[in-house]
Length: 198
Image 1 (tube, helix red, strand yellow):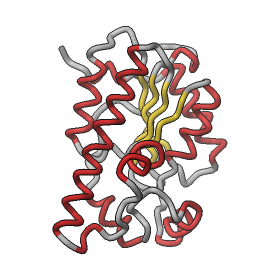
Image 2 (spheres, one colour):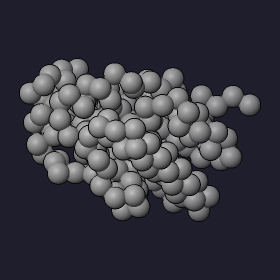
Image 3 (tube, rainbow, N blue to C red):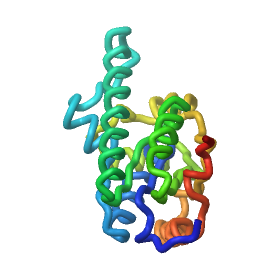
Image 4 (spheres, helix red, strand yellow):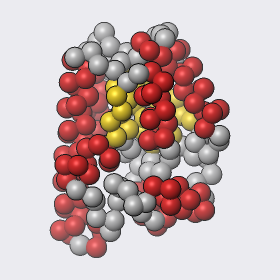
């Protein structure tokens, strides 16, 4: 579907932690005059509190972390549903690291066949320890439970790459270069509706 960037109703920015999702989404939301909802800053932290940076320390901490994350995705998808229903443009950021949440988003989009939704996946090509630690230093303390390189590697290893049509951008490259690629994708790239089968 070819469209003006301002004709896109929903932009999903996904990718593993500290890959530049929020930075891209904030700039993009301003550019297309949309609201930006980040699963960590706007959903999880305000509703469930700052996540435990070491959820693996006990079974109880892991259970709470999983419950909080599940609740955060439910709330993010509900807010997305409302924005689509009310025809309010939205940019959302979340890892979408589990197939279950990827499928739930596609299921939601089947309710809005006339809406235009696009996806961008942030994937830095050189996520060295130095790169990740520099990114973490810029955002810590933050509303995420990825606070060190070891945790980053652990979370990234469990990442299930979405199988929906999306633009994959190398967020190791200068922001200005990748931002223009995203704008072109909003104009001409395949939409998420292409993934939805009836």
